[in-house]
Image 1 (cartoon, rainbow, N blue to C red):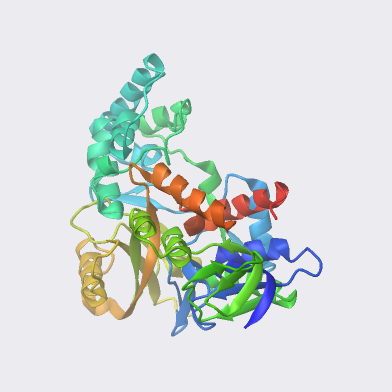
Image 2 (cartoon, rainbow, N blue to C red):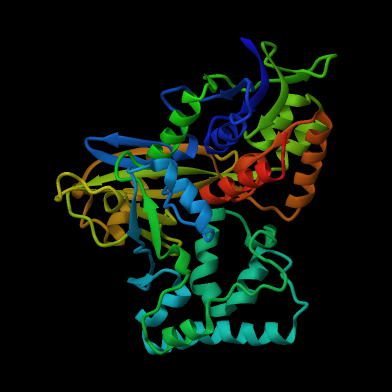
Length: 441
């Protein structure tokens, strides 16, 4: 199949970003190996257009970042095919649309409820001011310890149980907790919320960028076009089965492709199994936990509300969030709209996509998004095996053991799944940009 200076495993967002960085090196022959076909390329940044309606099949990707320079670089990839939008996200609580983030949007609630929520948060703030050394032992302790019992019980616990499908006590807290940094909203904004005064939290998310056409796939396609024009070889439809090192220190992938170096963006457990066929490597690979995600697209014979994404803590509703795709890319026919709803699936669980789809439609009717199921024009669902990495209590230990094995092989593993971190589009970009700054070879 060929000889290359460098092989990149995985042709998603991270793989192409790394390729773009390395292609600036003259006379550097690079190839990307991607298991999906050319037709299905894009990973979680895929979109499908059906009857003029656009669906992001890996979930909603609203482009924003706390780092202005990073979001600027991402938006630059889209050229003229981008617009800046105002975020209209809500939490559906007590049959009311509460502006997101919830703690800043409770001004919409009755006064007594406002007091209950804010009282719990303020009590925890006072506790933290007196106990600077306190830190949570697990994700559940982080939720209750920072936001109080009332907020935890009414919103954060049911919502997170729905996403993660695991006891929250079995998850680590270090991915959301940084010692010495209180993740509380601004005190002034909380007081305003308690007094019933509208305010905005997470200002970096108040606005976002999104393609004018083509869905989030347009971002991937723009990067794809850039790297292919500069000579990148993309080998589609090739799963990484095994990686060996010959006597000259060259890597041999699938017994047919050779390279001087290998960079991986594929999921860590799959990479481990490709380099070592041993009981130890199998056991380590199995220790990585994750959720898949089913994205259910629904086309509706009614207009689009002035909303973007809606978070649903209610445990009786199967999906944890739905997003109005027609608010991102309006339908040509204003009497039609479309949305995507997200349902997570624990690793190894058998997926009945048809059953999930029918339940999503039923629940949309139950919470009033549609008046009845007759409003539905069509549905389509997509299953993504890797949706969310799960931070188990031994996550750091497992990850470090994996990285030691990879270091011994001279393989660098990067990106959301290659690093096994819950990183958004901007965080992946920043991590790879930092690799370049650090002079990674």
